[in-house]
Length: 462
View 1 (tube, rainbow, N blue to C red):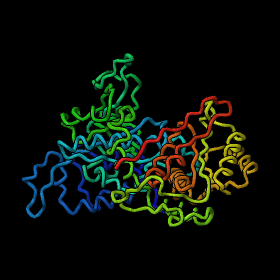
View 2: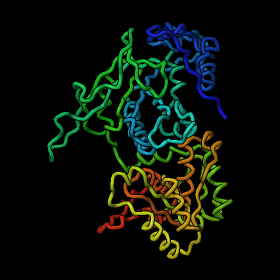
View 3: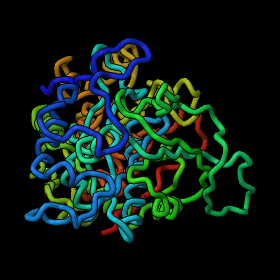
View 4: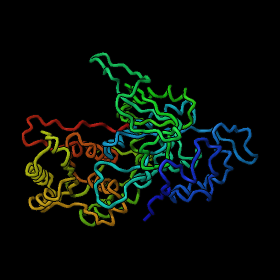
């Protein structure tokens, strides 16, 4: 188990840390072993790797002509960071990644940019007690080399090492237009405007902006500006190309839309979001042990290089079990008419088991302990992945969710919850694996719902 990241020791109120950082890279300590005691082992690894080149190579504004001979001159790349509205969940954030990756591809047509992956943590649905769940790198959940085959990305701590310190030159807070838009007159536009909501940043005694910054308290921003935006991700590109800032963060990035939702570029990025192998292995072992499911029998062989994996829909059969995602909690609190009661869900599950001649059902749910016990009584065929405390500490709540999704993605038939992004991501995984859409795009209906429209099939494009 990897150790928790270390943070700067406390200092007297209003005083900078003894090992304080300057916003200017030429004043930052050289990225070697010395001066890194407050950083996690993850950053030390990248810092030592960077130390193979002299620190001058990473200084802002350092001309390639002045690099020492013997080192190849590479273009000075710029960094795009982003964050999302704090209440948004894990699976919506995965969708926002696709939007920002599309923006990076637009920028790369003109300049060298890299997308800095925002560390995971402090999400609403991650409620396991006594588990440290902040500053989590993407490699805990996804295969980062696979991401890089579609979009150039680096982890946040690698950004700190490479750029010379935990400083972001410019933060743009994206927001809607205060006046809204008139129906029938949609247009894409972006303008610097006064901030509509109270800023989630404050200035310290040195006039640096402090904020959440994914749990990295040492991170500071030099400037914060609000932008009203209406349009797809690429609408931001001209502004970024015209700014002199080397590192730019887009906060509230969920306010930009997809460039081409459901097109080839969308699916390339989505396919590149391969789950971390250690999580897939846990899911596969569970399938073998409890669900009599293997890739060979189910025709769901997975190619590690996603660029080489192209399947025909209908080729995958899936394991001999029904996959279910039953969303509860906030969906119930919102009194959604399209979410069934426990009894209504069980009735539908029983009918599907009979229809497809299946004897087992795997259920992924955020139901309360009381509702879960009720499900067990009414549905003794139910199988769930119930991790130990040690497994939750190791894989985190995000990893447990991925294991649930992976198992659901391999079921003979899947039924999910209306408008749930957790279910949407399972739809996409099954599309990638090659399932017949009729076995994938299904949802529960509310007990009193008169018209029960089923999910739209977004066909994979290669």
